[in-house]
Length: 273
Image (cartoon, rainbow, N blue to C red):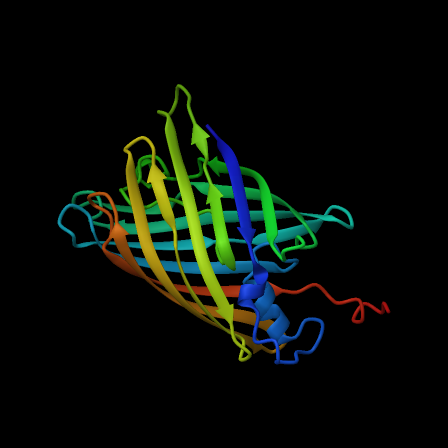
């Protein structure tokens, strides 16, 4: 069974920009890439590898879970006004003592979002996008899928909004799996300095309509854009504290993300004017 729903995003990208008196080089400079990286609807092709370490879960509060999320983002230009942006989240999970004293390891369910977004911001400088979201049953263990996973572990809608809100709500019902409905809210505020460093705060909250329970982690982010040769890479460290969570959910966690950026050549680089 494939879960389907709607995913929405709206943000003010000017919040993430460096101070106005900083003069930056045009094109794919480090400053421009750092600013684009904070915009989930930019024209960057990115491949984040997100490493999550969650502690204090399970019935005895001594459980541990490691989650690697592979999250490729592919923007496609539909015409001069609209982009289609594909965002995929494929999780690999290894957890100990989250469900009794058992151990599970394998793939989780895949979240696939498709955004339709205008290329230009609104008159008030807001960007927005909307489109379908699909939860694909790729879990290799019933205890790792999005419906039967331990409390507090749900697939998030995406990564790296700027200043705004990401929301999605996949739903399903059928004979093979019980009805599972959840809503994900991802508010965040990012600010990028002139040194290509991004500071951010936010949350990745989810509400389980079946159990009627919230999971609300507060997240603080620190990331730095660097270059290895000509390849730009963003290194991001995050701390998580679960302010609200069902029984068995983790108490706190750490996250380390490596994001590979593949900027498109500018017109000048392609020989254009």
